[in-house]
Structure formats: structure tokens, C-alpha cells
Length: 269
Picture (cartoon, rainbow, N blue to C red):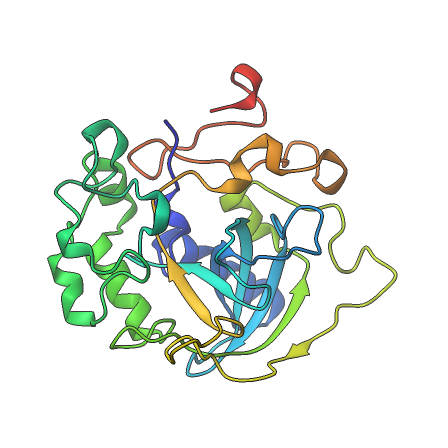
């Protein structure tokens, strides 16, 4: 069974190193991340595409790549992988069979199924390391710190709220981020006749009001499950670069990559 990679998580040591390298190379100042940007108008539902998001309360723009899909993600919403962001409908983080769960213990300390814990202080109740924890320890990460970092950087709000996306523009994925996911599009901005178009938010995030829309919300997740972009039926050869057609998932330790480009039977790894 394959899992999500924990070093994709916002503010992991690998993400910080990648964004610093990018910032030095370009002179920009951004935070890196991965998650879900649903786009029903895209032949690949957004998989592999990168976006630059301006988010209310966050001190730098987010440069993020969509590696997952979900019917619950609106076209102007980004679902960011953060430490305990909520296991959603496909929890393989905790509480299941030991062979199908990444972290020890039950799910009672993880907070809401959609959104995870509501308060920063609740992060300390999480397990620090996976069941196979050596790789995460060696990387210098732990789940408690990753959870706390998502509150500190304001990509989630204390009390369980979602910050507002102020603008979104599709951009070419930087090599520093692609190196972590191993998926790249052939139709990236800069390779097209039409320049990228920045879209300003039509309204603030309304997810915290009854009947409110998730449009223009920065939401969160961390289900520990192999993402949609790691399944070959979800990607199209014409839209992906050879050798970078699939998201490369991890073993249960959350760090050891499984080469799916394509080194196992029928690419189902």
C-alpha cells in the first residue's frame, strides 16, 4: 500500500529547503505547498498544475501544486496539506488496521475529520512520529511541530476557520517543487500563447457561515493517503512530461519514495 509523503506537508524541512532555494534563485519570497485545486474545466482536473495564491493574513504568497482531486473542492478553493489538516473521507493516518495506518493510536486526538484540530494547543496531543518513525526523525520533522507551524503561518485560523484566498493565478511549476512530487505538466504557462491571468477573489471565504461557499477559501487536509495524481488513470500522457507523469508516493514511513515512473507492475504501486 502506498501513502502520501509527509515531507509534502507545509513547512516540512524539505519544503522549507525547496522554497528557500527557489527564493534565492528567483528573488521572490513564497511559501511552497501541495494539495488540491479542483478544476472541472481542466482535462486533468488540475492535477500537476501550480498556482500562486495571495491569502489573507499570510505574510508571503503561496506557490502550490495540485496533486490531488476531490469532489468537495471548489474551483476557486485550495486544499493545502498541513500537519493534521483533517483526514477526510479516506483516512489512512490513524485508527485503522496497523498495516493501513501511518501513525500509532486512534483518531480521537486528531480533531475533526475535515479540518483536524481547531486550536494550536491541541497539536501537542498528536503522535510525533509514524509507526515507522526513523525517516521522519532523520528528516528533522515531527507532526506536532508541523501542526503548530500551520497555525503560526496563518494558513489555518485558531478556532477552526479558513483564511480567504485574495487572488489566484496559474504559474509554471518550479523545479524545486517538482522534485518533491515528480509530476509536471506540458501545458504550463510560459509555454502557451496566452499569458497567465490573475483572478481576484469575488468575495471572502464564507465557509464558516451557514450555507456558506468554500469558494475563495484556503482549506486544509492531511489524509496520509496516496494522492489522486499517483494513479495512472487520472493523468493523461498528452498533458504530462515523460518521466514525470505520476506523483511519486511514499511507503508507510511517509518519506521513502516509491518509483512509479514506471517501475512496478502496470504502474499501480
